[in-house]
Amino acid sequence: MVRKFAIAGRALWPAVAPLAFVLTGCASSAWPEKGPVAPRTSGVDRKVVDKGELAALLNDNPMSLARRAKEGAAGSAVAAQGGGPGGADGADVPAPDAGPIMKKAVAALEARDFAEADKLAREVIAIDPKGYPYAYVILGDVALESRDYAAALENYKKAMELDPKDGWAAQRAATALQKQKKPLEARALLRKFTDQNPDTDADTWDALGWMEMELGDTKKAEHAFNEALRVSEGRDAEAWYGLALIYAQRQDAKGTEKALAALFALQPERRLVIERDPTFFRMRIHGNVAALFSPKLMAEAKVAAEKKKKGEVVASTGTKLTVPGGAEKSFLDQIRFDFDSAKIRPESMALVDEVASFLKSQKGLEFVEITGHADRRGDEKYNITLSEKRALAVREALVLRGVPLAILRTRGYGVYCPLDDGEGEAAFAKNRRVQFAIGASGKVLGDELTCQERMRKWLKPTSSAKLTIK
Image (cartoon, rainbow, N blue to C red; front, side, top):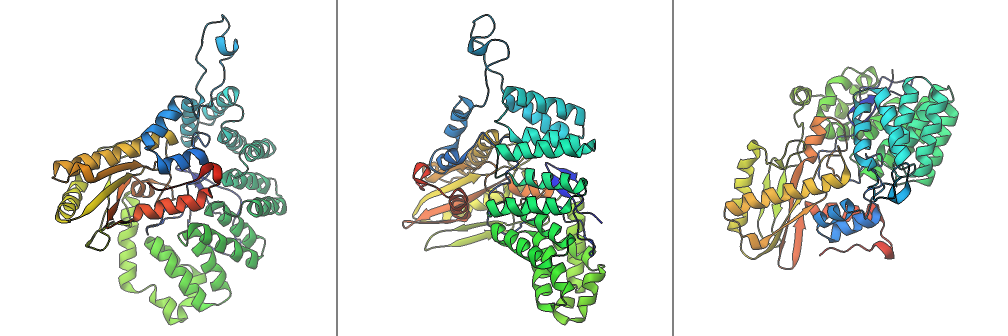
């Protein structure tokens, strides 16, 4: 059996898998509970928004951040070929922009048009050889597809050289080594990477965990999966599944129960497959493990599986409005948007009505901050602007329903506070949302504080990038 990793909606299959176990299609981490996380480091345009700009994102209007990037503060273009700054004839010639080409290259890779992806990635590198490390990952994937594993490894290592913190490039480099039948070197590469980058994304720790299991070191695998849970604050389904396998192998009923319960809280539909897995079936002689597969829970799992098959949201974090020292109101869903759209979905308008009614009923509100979010697809600076537009759309809807404009603030976080770091429409739909923070009596309560605090921790600000909340 093999385990798949996913990127930008496409499955990529390495040769890494625990040989002694039956894996059950765990390609991504679904995080339905609140508590956003830093995005993966393999984004389309990792150069556009750096730590300094993210610090500004917490303090400034993100629309101004997007404008600064557009006007060249984070530009990565170089002079056009053939003439330097003035062109061949000395006239001012605008430098080519690699960003749109990079987006097309990613789209071509998703569509498995490898020839086009290769061509476009090379164009990006010709314009800016160092600004887009992911272009080298695309070249590596093209080489991997053609079974030129040495060339693939060379390109992945180039990406790692340009972005030493890119866990996805490290994973792909390990895959290339696996394809060359060098599992020990692959493991050594990931061990070195995680030693140097202990706060890397959960996916990279998961990849090391499965590699350790394949090579028979379950203690090291357990450590890797626990590290994945540390960086994801317990919201990595893949890591819980790996730990469940390890504990079941050890006949550790308590550990198996804990790991499976956490896994099912994140991905309830997984009960259907795991119920038939012999590794866990044997553990059901223990009552607490057996209780996880009760008829009621299995029925709920079937419903969740059907919803996921249709691309619907399996679990939602909901919306919670809390006035410091006052009332609290919870809703089952969030205000949602379609892909690449700032128009509120029709089914969310009833929720907008309820939010407006709640806010109008409260006294002494100092402010209500509406924050917009986007899924990870597309250009990062564009998504900052799009998420701000989503927040503005909700503000306009609330004003039309009688909420005073003076108390409403807006902010856009783009891709930087996802609720679900998985792939596919169900995960993306959770991230296309708005959330609220309410200020009253000199205090602020709301999910966005969690987002800001997580970003503080992720950025590890220095004196040159000090973060404050206004």
